[in-house]
Length: 317
View (tube, rainbow, N blue to C red):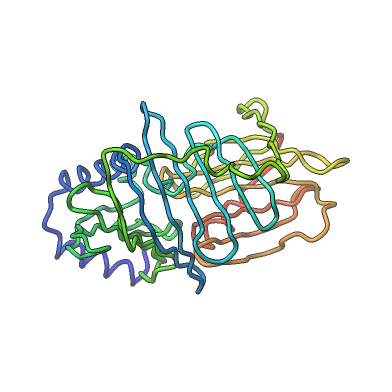
């Protein structure tokens, strides 16, 4: 663990006013709150010297979640999620894309893990109090035990444990991305407006993504020599490629909190990434391997995507 996060961890220990049990109880409440509460709020997303302003409407009806993300600056777009699907609406290009929802995706994806199961890879502590969106918050630190994952600083609403601000931290303790609510309304019931986004869209171009069948270990033609500690494959499917080319293998790896994707495609493709690339918190690394091009990408440090890329092997080896 580098110096920046080391000092944050030391500060966490000295400032913490909650026991280990209390910290995990707060984070457990957080996971429950983002799934079960009805809320409507505006937040800003800061990354790579760029700021996006979004509105999120989250509604729960008969245990079914509906979430609507609306871009308030830049190109107009909306993303609508329910328990089964993701719908993307882009008015500028007059297109609507509908696909199957993958586990863990969404505004709250980073808050879907059981923190006690992550204790081998992260340290959790309460580090103080603050104020976000005119609400009192408890501040928590999630500090990685190695340099293969980012750290987090999370501000939870005192009343209901909703995350009002989240800083993703690099190994020096510097924020590589931030999400912060500027306003938030929590109600007993909020209309999901689940169908209103389709009003007037009869002339849009519709794209229904074909579902991909997950591959079991026996059907996978790829394996890993050695993954960073804690990471494991949680999903593997083949995505349809352009006509005349092989399908693209898509593997998802996770440690329970951090997630990254591995794409394996025909090396004959034209302009592909070779070496490292970064955009804000997202790192990518590309290599050529056994007649294929491999790209590893995710909100993890550069060390992680490069290590995973260089660990990939055809299954027969």
